[in-house]
Length: 106
Image 1 (cartoon, rainbow, N blue to C red):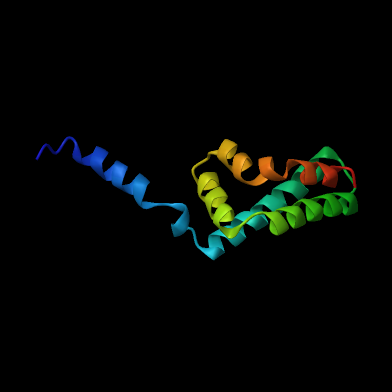
Image 2: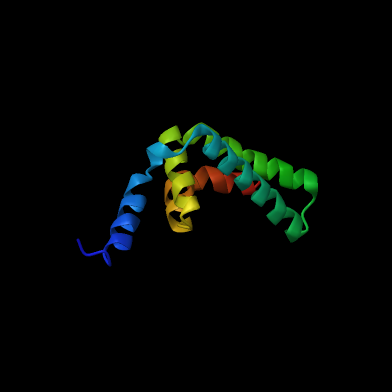
């Protein structure tokens, strides 16, 4: 066996072994909480009233909780861990864009 190929084989195996089904409920919960904290931090940095930020972030979370399947939450959590924010957006926000935009009007 060519041992120079071993690191590539291990890398390929490691990448394929971790799938959305491997994401735990705890990891999804942490991802949701991190998203909520990021929303609140962004609102505060923007200078918005804390109560108003809470209303908007709460609305965003509620829309996602009501409209995203657990399978898609797992996929979004996985893609986020890989740094693929475009995929997170595709899975979570794109299908719910109109409802999420309505939150900003609150």
